[in-house]
Amino acid sequence: MLTFISALILGVIEGFTEFLPISSTAHLNLVSNLLGLEQDNYLKTFEIAIQSGAILAVLFLYWRKFTNKDVLKKLVVAFIPTGILGLVLYPFVKEYMIGNTTLVLWSLAIGGLLLLLFEKVHLENDQAQDLAHIDYKKSLWIGLFQSLAMIPGVSRAGATIVGGMLLGLRREIIVEFSFLLAVPTMLAATGLDLLKNWEFFSPDQFYLLGIGLLASFFMAVLSIKFLLSYIRRHDFTVFGIYRILLVVIFLLIGWFGW
Image 1 (cartoon, rainbow, N blue to C red):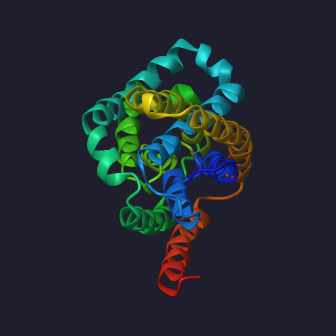
Image 2 (cartoon, one colour):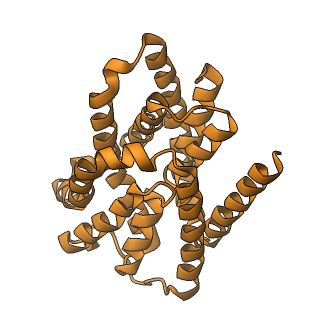
């Protein structure tokens, strides 16, 4: 049963991992298991809805970007693939994929290996760039990459960032665009899920959701600042290693009952 402490823990984890290429969904699933929380409809909705805290963090830090009509139009184009696929596949994803620990572990492991391979062969574009270098065609492709993150454990941030870099964008530019794209994407996911499930929530459950949202907001602000500082000097190899180690640790916990 979700409590104040568990809601706070999940909010902190969501906020810090949302914008890193390590999958917030995977971390919420694994930690929920460790806390002994049942993967019922409320917990699944809670884990989706607390993403709103991360949305607020992006709006808080980047509100000026959302006054740029050109940027907004590109975000709309990038959102289209996930928006369409999300509506079509929502029942299947909610019922069979969210909360599926086996799928999460496979996604984390494969994603980690692919991230390590990518950083081995990728050559960074050394030309100066800004958001204007992301045209509508690139926006659509980035949106297609993002749609892969409907598979729990893939990482929305990881899919969009690696996809953008494959398209020739510099790391810091696609990271910033990934932050911005999170707003319509997570807002739509949260809105759709709450619209379908809000009547099943008790007042206490909405209170716990508020705790998760606040924790997610503050940690997401810190996470965004951390990632922007980190990518100035490092690539994503450490995140690939981390994903694989996380899988190994969780399997050891499961096998030996630690």
